Length: 74
Image 1 (cartoon, rainbow, N blue to C red):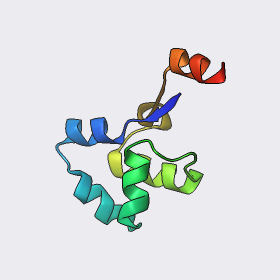
Image 2 (cartoon, rainbow, N blue to C red):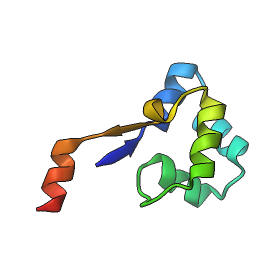
Image 3 (cartoon, one colour):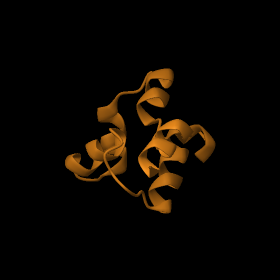
């Protein structure tokens, strides 16, 4: 399972979830689903914006749990 690590990155940088929400300018419902890993897809444009705002790379932004991925495929 691929996981978005936004909350961890925000914590490391001393920034709030609210700060990021305001920067992205999206609805709070969609924003919250995204940062809580409750969405199926994220636009490449949004990934690029997140990387710019959080000063990170996509490798920092995402992690994958292979065990959880294998379990969901069975």
